[in-house]
Length: 200
Image (cartoon, rainbow, N blue to C red; front, side, top):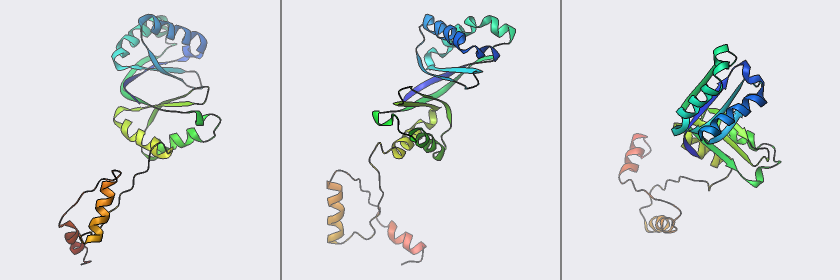
């Protein structure tokens, strides 16, 4: 993931001429030395947005306002906005190409984790999909993507109740010694929980 990025959007009827707008937009950003991380354009071609580092966001806005000064004055470009506080989350891999459903799985994982997607882009090679999310949702988005696409080992939480005998203690110690689990002992709490539930 890439943190601390900003979405810079250009919107309006003047964006309908996508080729010219893209040429001028990227020309202005390149001239100003602004690195573009990601690009996304609405299918209706009424808006185009680029993702840049937050440290370059103010510069990007200034140079785009200069590049589209006439269009802003005429109203054919209605707005140029900057939204900071975002992160880019991407999945990349050879196994994604020509495999239906990867994008759906990725975006569904975001929805299930209540992560709002602000912008999305996919490479023509079908080997990368990038999403822009709120920075505060980035960790949750990464975990959701890893779980949905089996990019990490599954985690399982198990409670051992009553491991006070020799066999129970030996089992718990073997699991901890394996280095693949972490154990936490909560003395006295089991009896309290059972009593509260009237199971003792």
